[in-house]
Amino acid sequence: MRRSRVLALVVAGACALASGCTGGGSPPGVPAHVSVSGSAPVAAGSPSPSTPRARSFTLVATGDVLLHPPLWAQARADAAHTGRAPMDYAPMLAAVKPYVSGADLAICHLETPLAAPGGPFAGYPLFSAPPQVVPALAATGYDVCSTASNHTFDQGAAGIRRTLDDLDAAGIAHAGSARTPAEAARTTIVDANGVRVAFLSFAYGFNGVPYPGGDRWRANIIDVPAILAAARTARERGAQVVVVAMHWGAEYHQEPSAQQLEPAPELARSPDIDLVISHHAHVVEPIQKIGHTWVVYGLGNLIAAHSTPGPTNQEGLLVRFTFTQGPGGRFSVTRAEYEPLLVAPASPIRVLDVPVALATHAYGSTTRARLEQALARTIQVVDSRGAVQAGLVPIR
Image 1: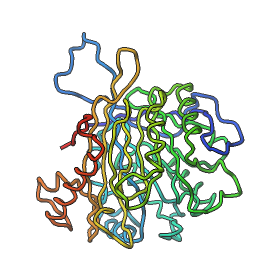
Image 2 (image 1 turned 45 degrees about the vertical axis):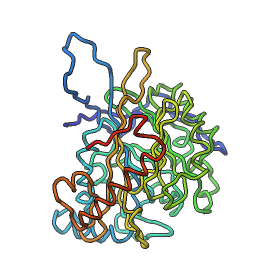
Image 3 (image 1 turned 135 degrees about the horizontal axis):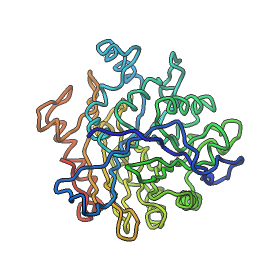
Image 4 (image 1 turned 45 degrees about the horizontal axis):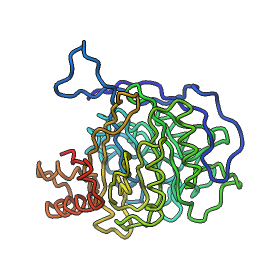
């Protein structure tokens, strides 16, 4: 689907930090220099022009963009073929581009702070990642990225500034970290097919790294009352839909932790929150519908190359939610879908769309048996909290 481009809005809002923040924000309605897609989905059996059409939009979200050194090497190798020196990450992401570029709103999670174009680059434990990934994210079709993670402070205030500057330059909106108190006090609201969608981002902590300069407004930390207040403020400032990204859970555990299970119902039952998506565990976790709200406990990785690779941390999810406006004007999810993904770790490193790879016998650097294993495990984990009975379906 071809996507039109419209201006997003970044609107002044309440600071979502548990510790509070200082400084004011811009007045509501100030346009930002970011662009997001806004094309309407086309459905079979569309009503005639004389029949009022229910307003709707599609939202796609994927897992962690976690830039380990093997990915830099692969991006350099790909750039040698594409001519997009010095690094080209787009070939790694090609399998998800049809979903991402075809959505009215596509969300990524940029876990690692970015370095200057020439580096120096560093991997775990204090990431400083190549910024060349950002043009690839934009070319793939991502519109907004969450940036609150346990690695947000790895390169201090300079890392936050570089990351957000690069996202701005690529036309990708962002939420979760901030360069100034005024930015921290804003609510990110983007346009999705004419619908104003607020996007909020929070992390459980920052690996013990101090707040840069002691400035507690630098990134959003998980605090349920603060999250609920931020969602309420987003509504007051014009958001018709509110999406919350949570960076939480126990790494490499596919069962949600108490840190996730205890606050999830309170978030899901808030009248101001419409969807919860999550990152950090680096493995696929269940999807659950609580009341009227879907909670994705863990999307796994989109791209990563852990030094201790395991089959589960090579697997990920792409989710797609269709929001439709009801008779009372409120938007709700009318279709919930998922697609299993796999990072093929051998050269060439590629994100694979598992069902498509199986159907087309395009196994890349992996095998059919490995893809079948990923598919079976993903289906089992995703449905372990009743998602299918609640209406979740595979995209393919």
